[in-house]
Amino acid sequence: MKITATIITLNEERNIARAIESLRSADEILVVDSGSVDRTVELAQKLGVRVIEAGWRGYAAQKNWAAGQATYDWILSLDADEVLSEALEAEIWNLKKTGPRYDAYTMPRLARYLGRWILHSGWYPDLKIRLYHRDKAQWVGDFVHESVVVSGRLGRLESNILHFTCDSLSEHLKTLDRYTTLAAQEVAARKIKVPLWRLLFDPAWTFLNTYIGKRGFQDGLEGLIIAHMAAFYTFLKYAKARIMS
Image (tube, rainbow, N blue to C red; front, top):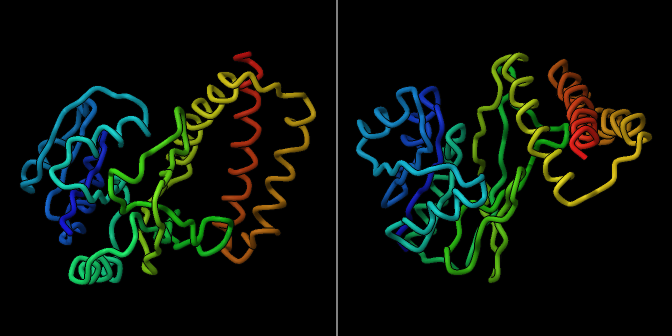
């Protein structure tokens, strides 16, 4: 079992070295960059990984294209702001030693937000399929929240991917603005009607579900902020979709 780790990047100089350095279990590391104007490519090349510069295709298409350029059939897909925990790295080493029994593997993702690890709020365990045989799985999702669909057998690894999200509220707001635009484009493309009542009631429901239903209150102040941001995301997505339609 030989693995190619793939990372798609755009202006990730803050994160790229940390991500690459966590991928010691990979036999090849491939960075596909879509036009960074910072030091992303330079830092990746200094770490000795393979770098391909390619135009942006969208999240799912870019990740599928990266998998197609890999030397090996087993793909370990990581975002630039993620790392393998030491425990997950050990699980992958063991999997390589014993051989895979499945065609793809899920793993939990633990997020760090405003300096705190988030264990509730619907953010954990946040299972992701990130290790897969490229003949048995592919990324889907034209706009945002891309995911892997598997046509074979699905196994599970127990240890965490560590996700380093926003360090500030300003950063979160910028991310939220970008993703709500993509989500609204998806709603508009599917010709889904957004009645006014959804803008009135869905954000409130999202807040209550995140803060109470998903126990965001146990994440302290950060959990309260996450619940408010989730409600704002819902409002912006539907408001933008109505404007686009």
